[in-house]
Length: 229
Image (cartoon, rainbow, N blue to C red):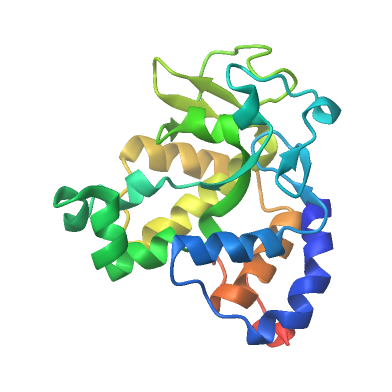
């Protein structure tokens, strides 16, 4: 992930002054492709990718079921769109499509780059809208990938190096968009936030995303918007 952010820095520092926060999820994905280029690492397993193709063999990833989807990159909401939307009235009256069309708060949340990461398509699909948590070890579920999915419990245990970032993203989304977290989830994320403190790559990513969004994730740390120009 560190190499991803270092590679992205030159691109963003040269053009961030002219950047605007995305208004839709579609716009956010287009910006994200640039933000993570040209040397790219996906989120859940740490695999490298070029364009939309994942270098599975190089990172020891073994498809669980869907080899075609495993070979491509998809853009994943750390806090799922379902979790963002189902607490809002728009979701009750027409689901995600209605929220995307008619709820401005949901639109901003769905397009927030602080919550968007590149993921192996198969893992993105398996994660679904499952919450994060501790699950029994399942060695080899995705080959060498350390992220695990418990389909019965509807839980995902992410690899250790991203647990802190996940926690701080949940705190950010909760505060900015009024997302309610269960007591159990908040306790888990507080523990992850403490056990896995902010790393340099995460601070760097926060700064670069802030240059596009116009603000950083305060739970990661301060940003300098003047540096964007």
